[in-house]
Every structure is written in C-alpha cells, then in structure tokens.
Length: 470
Image (tube, rainbow, N blue to C red; front, side, top):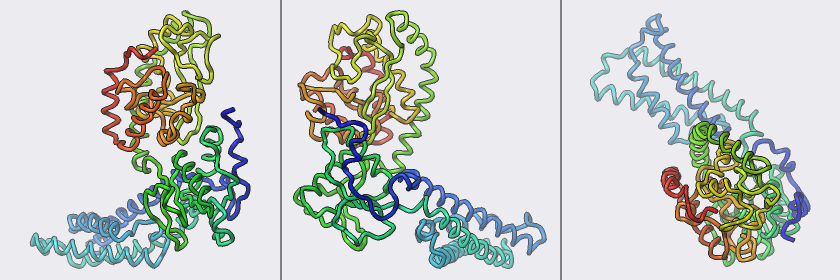
C-alpha cells in the first residue's frame, strides 16, 4: 500500500535527451569535485617545485653550483607572494588552467607581483647587497619559462580529464525543448514520485544523483512546485528556470544558458564540510570500533547463550538522500518474534525483548555494531537517528505524520543525535513524539558544525543509560 517496489522510480522518467544517461557519466559530483580539488593541488605543488628549480638553475648558471645561490630568503617571499597572487587572480581555477592564454597571462602577472614584493622586501630590509642581481634575473627568467611550459602541460592533462572534471548539468522538464545544448542531459518526467513512497524517492535519487547541477524547467506551475519539493526531500541542489515565486521557497540565485535561475534546494553540507565530518567519523569511529571489539564479542556470546537465534540483528533503514542501507544491532528480541519492518515500536515490558536484551537496550549497548556502519560510510557518529521503513506514530507512517519528514535525510543518520541528548527517545506513541524529533533533527542539520558533533558526543555519555530505552 505504501511502496511500489525496487524499480518504482523507473516509471517517473519517460524520455532522456542530450548526452548519455546516468550510468555513462562516470564519476559522481562528489568524485568530480574531489578530482578538481586534487588537480588544483597538483598545479600548486608543481608551481612551488618549479620556482625552487628556477632558483637552483640560476645558482648553477651564476656560480656553477646549484647549492651556492644567495637568493634563498628571496625565494620564500617569491613563492608565497606568487601563490597568493595566483589565487587572487583565479589562476588555479580549472577553467583558467584549461585556457592557455588566460592561464599564462595570469601566471606572468602573478610572477610580476611576486617579484615586486620580493624587491620591496629586500629594499625595506636593506638587504639588496646580499643578493646577486644576475642570479635573481636568471631565476625570474627560468621561472617564467618553466611555468609557461607547465601551463601548457596542465592544459593538455586537464583536457584529457575533461570527462572526469566537467560539471554535469541535468535538465528536468520539457520547457527547454530543442534548445537544450548537446552537452546537457535532459529528462522529461512523467510525474513526480509520491512523498509516501520511499522506494520511488530512493530510485529518483539514483536516477539524478550523477548531475552537478539540476535545472527544473517546467511550464506547469503545479508540476514545477511538486518537483521542487521532491528534490528538496531528496537533499540534492536544484534550480528553477522561469519560476513562479508564489509557491516555491527560494534559497539563492544563479544563471544557466543566459537565463536567471533560482536555487530551490541545497545539499545540507558543502564538499569541505562533508569531508571534515567523514574524516572525523572515520578516525573516531575506527578507534571506538577497535576498542569495543572485545566487549562486542563477549556480548554476542552471551546473546547466543541467552536465547536461540543470531547474535546480530540486521534491518533496512533509511539513510542519506533517502537511500536504504542495512543497519546492524545486537539482537535484543526473540528471533521468532522479530519485526523486520519496524512497524511496532518496543514498549515497556515488551514480551518480545529477552532478559539480556532489556539490559542491552537500556544501556544502549545494542547500538555498538553500528560503529561498523559508521566506518563503512552508511552512518555518522552524530546525526538524525535512522528509522525503519515501517515506523509509525498514531497509526501513520512517519512521513505521513510529519510533512517535512524526508528533509531530515539530507545527512547521514547518526548513532546519536540532538534529539537523543534532549531525551527524545523510546517509543513513538503519538504524532507529537515524531514531530519533536524531526524538529530537533532539522535544527541539527541547519546548525551543523564539527564542534556541535563533539558537543553531542560528550553529552551522549550522560544519556547512554535512559529510562525510555526499552
């Protein structure tokens, strides 16, 4: 009644135009962004090495020994000033590095600025007599030559990597028609997926996640607003072209093909923030998993002895971008009475819970295997708690009870979260129970910082044993 199966999202897209479909795009947006960052870092590192090589070359020409140069201090100033000037001139942007004339002109301008700074510093410190003018001249000429050649090599290398670094644009809707450029993919949807169908939302995310930019181009006002809500629930950045502002919340402005667009959905975190959070999870989660491994082995043996059945319980949960994953827990219920869909919340004195299981739930020890989910990347140490697909409140599925429920999946689910440290845990008997938790989750997402994660982790130690955990 509530789902349409694994392939539900396939029926929502009738036609694809432009470039090939999602499966042939190669890298995803996060991977392409990482490749662009890596390419920029390589260019910066090469420039530093080439400036050092220019200094050694100048010393070799002037003194016959590359280590006999006198411009070492000046080289430090030149390198730092050159990097700052290049950054200010957007010299390390991928678009600049792929344009040979712009790249060389901006590089030479940055080198001139760096030289001016170095000369000004030498003059201010009255150190001009220390340095060989001829050596300095050789160094600047060599640096310019080396860097020009490097810029030409960068361009060739980046052009060969174009398929991996070029931002991918996906146009959803028929409004642009035949005007869609040949290098842009266009999908004409039949209808937006239902917010009451998690499988359809998951499939829709899989169909469009390969794009760096998503343009919503619909003539129909209701269809445009519906798709704006869908991409916001999925947690993918999207823009609207030719929008009607009355029914769509606008987050920012941009442009595409000379036309203004309005940003109607954004990812919760940018690439740098996601990298920081993931690194924190990976380092801390790995340490905690290793530390907890002996205790886990003991508890698993006790569970096997306490009641028949496997020691671990696996259940499909909803993760980031509404994608499902297998969540691991220590089994706390009788195996013959388990609830695979999570439709029935555990209650106080629940007959399904084993003797050992009651203690494990109250002490939150049943959650320890989720450290493996954290290391795998399914979960985060801190985030909105994951829910089973069948979870209900007041007889309604969670996403039916709370209109903006799906928005909480803009981040990876967490082992703990803001709702949990505020005591919002246990069974969801009423609609208000899930509303308060979703409100806390959205507050966390909107105000995220790495320090907030650290704070919540420390606060969690006070609520590990909780009277509502049953």
